[in-house]
Every structure is written in structure tokens, then in C-alpha cells.
Image (cartoon, rainbow, N blue to C red; front, side, top):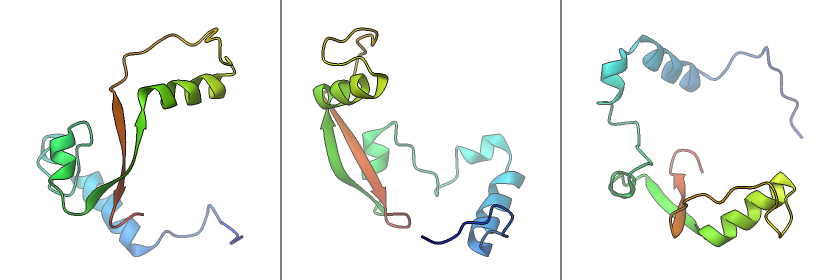
Length: 96
């Protein structure tokens, strides 16, 4: 495994993105075409660099959340939530 140094200077591409958004006014961020709004399926699917790689059902996620929370199958502490029937998992071309 490659040794990671938290004090190492990040690549210029990462630094440039950071500078871009650091200097940008909050009202201009909503207008930036490079930002993808994943809360809207239509907005995400209209971007050619974004694609759905997997979809989870609400039942799958509920089981995963219960297992993670240590609630087991009986549901114990985990409260039921209103999940959509299907939850997409996206991949961006620039960050697989």
C-alpha cells in the first residue's frame, strides 16, 4: 500500500479546484455547471459524465443500516424511514 503523507502537497489539479470554489461567491456555486445535483435524478442523468452503476432497493438498504447499527433482523433501535423504492449509486467519469 502506498504510504500517505498528510503533509504532502496535493496535486495541482486538486489545488486548482479548491482555489476555484474557495474564491467563488455562494450564489455563484448554484450556477456552476461542474457541480452535479444528485438530489434530482433528471439533473444527474442529463450530465454525460455521470452514470448509474447500481441501484439498491429500500429493503436492501434497511437491512444494511440495521446490520451497521447492530440492530439485527428484529429492527430493535433503528426507526423506519421513508426511503424511495430504488436508490441509485452514481459514478462520475472523472472519479470512478
